[in-house]
Picture (spheres, each protein chain N blue to C red):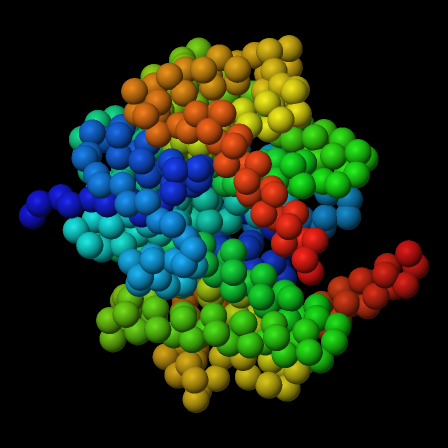
Length: 230
Length: 230
């Protein structure tokens, strides 16, 4: 059977980057279908009727939803390229644990920091974010074992989970004129982020910071206009 | 190497039931260590320094945290018993998708329904909960393919994810004197719930409804006392 692979998504979404990076790691060709979201396409509504969210992977027209579920599916369905999850069950569990941490704790803290309205709330959210980065720095040192990625020599599940947020990290750094991932407290993560963004599987799908910052400004203006009209 | 397996947890927690059911399915003997939580034990703080939460699985003293991560670890680390995840990558993805839905959407709706303070908020949360159960009924019919469990002939990841909440579903039904999972709208889930609770791997760890309801009353009284004193 031919492998017809499509990713339904939008370029600024970190979650949409995940299946794209995973497919690139596996050297699987795919069509990228840009979802305009307003209104949501028939294809999206039909493929992800529960959440109606991107990304959706369509593998021979069969949909898979939820970015981390898709990445694991890609790892299991395509044997080409390097493995995205480690082979040892304990190592797999540790990578899954940290990938969940990034989505369930770290990213919500980043959103809270960007949306905080008072200087005190902003500072509190920034502290939590920094604390999370220190934990991830420590995890990196343990898991990478002197190699360039969380996954060792190759980009793995946790690299993809955290790395997909780097575009937005850089936008936040640019807007606030302050480093989030900085050399003095998290030197390993600084080196990791550079290597991740320069990787062949990543560089074509990681949005340019300036373009993403423009998109962010438009989004923020829309949110403020909506808030002012209610 | 000997397999020394411990689960650090507390009997009323649905999340703690998950590794216990998984270990029972694999016929792996384990010690259950009751965590009193107040104060948190040294063992918990050392084993799960990031979240400081139960359950923790200790396999030859190596900790694994986060209930769904632990269940997948158990499936991969112990080849005895039936498989908890399906063998086909697409089926695995579908089971992971629904297990995430249960934790990320359905259970938060159940919590919202139990905590809603006005009749309107309660009704809105109950509607969302019912809608979720209809989706799960539909998923059950597709996935079980006429067999007793989401996992087919055997209890699988999604059975464990949803089934672990059944104790609390029954407490909620008892307290509100109304069926949440009812025969008229979700007949397959009613039959599934009965079979799940009666399964050899489950019945010893599923809390009795009366005992759990007593625990819930104590917790609610504590919460109300805390709210009144602030």
